[in-house]
Image 1 (cartoon, rainbow, N blue to C red):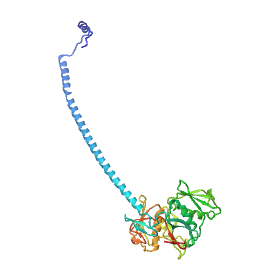
Image 2: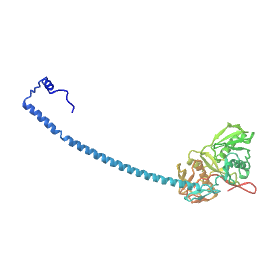
Image 3: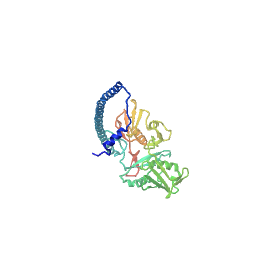
Length: 395
């Protein structure tokens, strides 16, 4: 223990030097003050008890909150796991559905359809790379009819060579159409781009009749998997047309949104579906297909007796559903098959891949199963080349 620096005598002297202290209160006042102090001390004894009770309450609340949060997180984890499992299963189903659609897409020839394993009707269409579609003017050069020529299987790299060969050899008169070819065009795939260059010879008919040429080439490019085409004239960039002016390139619309009518030059000639006017709404496009356009050789593709109550579009599934009226009529004839084909290609032009008829007047027209979802065809107006005289006949 540390020794104090003050001695006992020094401490006594210091205490004597302190001033005197006197309490002027009487004994009763002093007693009351001491009693109040004791009472205050006694009253403070409840504080530890209340503090302990309050602490216990906080502990209980924290415990309940902890267990609730724990259970909530556990439950949420189970829900997320279940949701993830359902999502995985849905993804698997979607993959299977997509695979099923791809496996049955377009392996048949001619007008009509067949059934797939999912119960859908697949439009009869040429297999990919087994047709070349060429835009051919009618006899009056008013409309451009897309004609799809059946050819032997070819590699995609040879597409433009096959296109040029069939264009140069096409005889429009034998098809009941106008004589417009050959044009002696040269097609080249632009490296690294989804575009095709078209070189036009000097003094070509394509330059003189520029409006007809451009409408024709747009119809051709629509079926060549191109997003745009470029033009050169004798190898020089751009082509100078008398009416349209100088053109270097033109982008192709993703969807042309046209309605389809029927063209037939005369009773002895084949009939074709032909794109006509553009519309913003598919219901308007289909309704216009019932009207006579007053153009020589052109007639409606949908009879007035074929009625519907409403048209439902599903952009997510790329499907159009047509709810037919109870008194809707359509017979199983070649004309009726072209009616269905015109509807399918109208839907295709609006970006849809499937068409479904609700309450059809009959279950089958040609090879089309109207009571099933029908996949839109790849190519319109498919014809077959004759091996004997190199002429073409329609399927």
